[in-house]
Length: 298
Image (cartoon, rainbow, N blue to C red):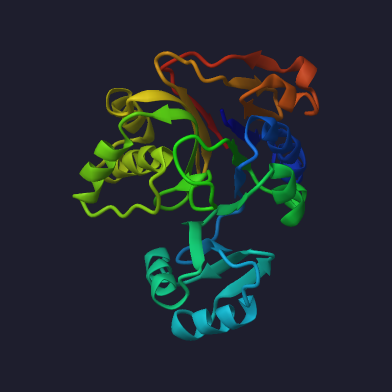
């Protein structure tokens, strides 16, 4: 049992409320899983060729000042850097793969959580309420968010195993359910040179969809192929730079509810987590149908 969270703000003048409105949804879904939690925010897009990178220090006492100096010296003297507790955000000219390789060589205790031009991601173990307070997530601005609360059933409790999972740039995925064939998918992708970070089944789904898109599929056709390739039960919520995408497996046994108004689209595993949203009583509220792809664009 896990909780999924999605929120897309339709009007630019209301995007200052993204974190304020999303945080209570995530907090409420802590009842469905308090082992770990995470949320991805999509906001103003950086101009090329800069990238926004989200980092996490596995040790609580990371010296971010010396980390920044070494990273700037080795890869990009012009980078900008902000840190809070165990998280840091970097805006840099360096390619994400170059930064990831540098981390593995020089700072193995720091993990790259996500990369792109609009994506910022926060994850940690424990109840989402702690995540929200530790990283001041109510203050986040942006266009849309994808979040998750986890009750671990098939792999370790750690930041690496928590959702959202990312693959490629400005692409993340959260999952409620369980896949029965993640290792067969993983072996196929590893033979194609795709590197995995964990043994979590959700990572297999995330990297499978990203691989299909790298091969030329649209996200929708990649998901359609997943109906045949992803064996198990799932509700998947996906975030890209400009949209939210929701899909449930053919049996739709994992819960999901969506609420639409002129101002926002909100998605959760349970309606009660949406009750605080403005105008919720006038919203179009529905249970997404099985094996149907729902897309909302910024």
